[in-house]
Image 1 (cartoon, rainbow, N blue to C red):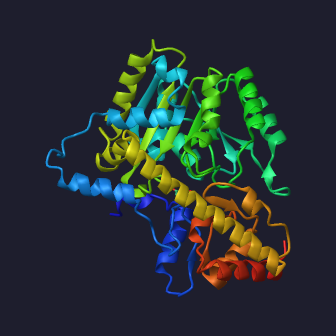
Image 2 (spheres, protein in one colour):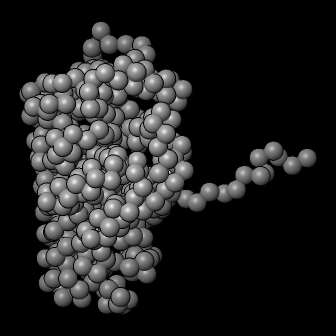
Image 3 (spheres, rainbow, N blue to C red):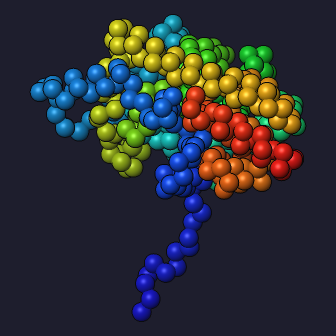
Length: 407
Ligand code: LMR
């Protein structure tokens, strides 16, 4: 008798993790990892933020801590501080008590919980994501109960900029009550955010068409180096009176990738439905994973709630943002000096962790196979994978590849 499992079909690999593994398995000395979005120091190694290490040492010695379950919705000290960091301490939504924060399994968990709540309790079925977007948005929303995935135009590859007309056209054509996934800042993968004026126009259309904003905030601090500036779009939508969800991740800005620390922030029009919404979120979490883990959440909560630690942390965020900026200008300068065909201005115009290089799939394949430089097929590179030691090698490789395989 054949196995009951023989009916299962092989699923496609997850590109970003497959590339990361291929890089790790590669024995070539000069290999470079520009794939997964994770910070690296100038020595090309992961960085445990000093403030995080300090907290971990304190926690290890703190005999009052134990391993009891957290509440289903997580640590209140985390979710309220995270929501405040997103909306700003002056937010009227906070002072009017019409927000909810839930500690989640990083940003992905927040997306999943928010989407499941919207599908189950508000009956939303249609969602829109930008083309391109983070590859997981679609899967998360489908798994959460949405069944009508749709795309809105975002990128104009010719001008290497936002296709704003296309974006507005697609939002205008969206049916009422569609959920629109918006990247709060440092759009992944393009590194190009709407201007303030463009955000205002997006809000106008969404208000007029009764579309529901679901922000994904995975890079607060990485776009400008400033947490306040990076929250502008979300705060603007709140000031316009939108109800919304926002998924926050602390993977990148705290370097807590594998600890899965996130927050789902909900903003409601008034506080009346708050207890009901909270009770249903509680049941959704209970039915999925019961309650979140403690370690990373406790670190983030401690840092966000202590002025001195907060200062140490924002210094770290600036260190990361600045290193990325210097790699951006370094790569652009080198390509320009080499006379690599095409314009490379977009490398410094884009912001956040990624650059959407414009390299073609053929060029990407060549970089991976010939130079052992790992990047996504879309041409996205993680700027943090560049260091002062490998940047010449990468620039030369891109130069030779573009000459060999012109667009
Ligand atoms: C990325 O975009 O590389 C990261 O967010 C990792 C992931 O989960 O895809």
